[in-house]
Image 1: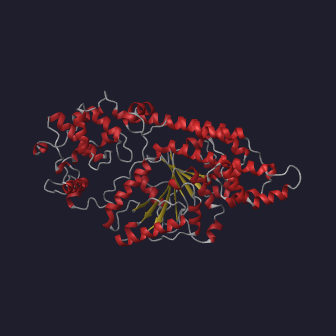
Image 2 (image 1 turned 45 degrees about the vertical axis):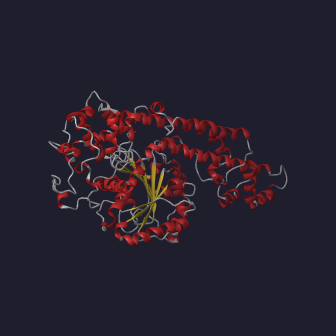
Image 3 (image 1 turned 90 degrees about the horizontal axis):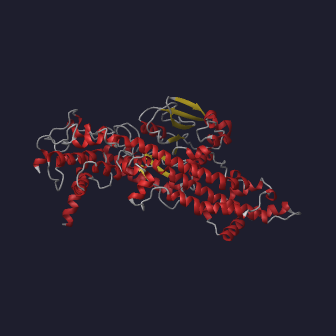
Length: 590
């Protein structure tokens, strides 16, 4: 195997494989742009179909049965179907919400306020734009291209504490982020806000694709207002992720206890029987104060960034999911209102009957549930509904119209399933997948991704040794840090980025397409894949991509056979422990 490393082990800067990829006769480097256009077009098509379904079949029932009143949810505007995925951050003061956003963006943003005291006193929406500026809340709420018009209902007191922060950002091209005020304990703060904080959080939660709850490792107490904010997330548990921040400030034993205490607190606060996903780490740009858990924190951060990177690609499915939830609630409300109306007398005793019905709302709900075979989870909150109903005259509400219910059933049973069939599925054959996704099925990248935070190797202590800090790299005598393909990694960085990696990873389809263009036989490519996909996750990161290109060049240019295993110096230093563990397991199984 020594001949693999004779001469120059790294592919030349204009190697055959790289030349094929970047050649003007090859469209791989431009596929990202074409795929991006197709992705936008397909997402816009889904949004257009959803808008049509909503306007034709759902909106008439919402108006007829006062959905906006009973659920405190205004009617949906067209722009809400076209909006980018939203990520909302919620937490008590000084847990690192704004620092997390700054870390993700890799830069400061207009209106940023960071400090140990309660600094963020307003809701801030971060938007992509050509120039840096802040946009007042009143202007933001009437912007025709932004989905914030529904916030007008919270009044001027809220809008004066709402602002937009616009800046050019590769991250914000894919998502919109919402920073919320830090939550304090005490009744005074709740009264002094001048608006209903939990209702605003609920409004954003309905429209968010991901809700991140941040907790400080030193402050696990959940105040009354934070509990109210968590309660209003009921029904959106699938969107909630938790972050245990500043975990580098405690040692491993303390972290274990803090993590357990957080899960216990969340179990008492969140109604979901499932345990919330909790990411542990230090989510800002500063080096870790305690490197004892550095590898854990780095792995957790990668998992979180992958979670964020998936949002744009899942946006169409999320929009469908949210509309289905809304349709089910509208249908249930129509049945409830229709039943209440049917129980009212035609002439005398209307007020008395209304009081009886309001008092007997639990039995009304049970009767409607059994009568129409509905799901308990689709019913509104009992006490809130009772309060709302008190201010209305049931006799003036609308009767049940079966034809309108049939329209909703047609949406749920025919139109939306047909729309889902047009989206890519794991059951699709390669031919069907190509028809649905166009060049993305083979180019692999949608062009939409949430980039990883910029160079964070220093943060996790990965360059602590003297050899690793050397700008010319480690010497061959340094068995721990030396990598024979280090120079190739630098040269191939641009070609890797041209493939539009999602969160730092090439999808299997993208990597397959690149390897197929080398012209090697399928069996050879299978062997190269097995050697290059070191962590066996089915994706190529930059280092695995470099290894694959090196193997292809060695076979094509030098006619070498593919080795049965990678030479140690060709394995990226950070992945050698993975191979060592795999070899140990293989030896045990013997």
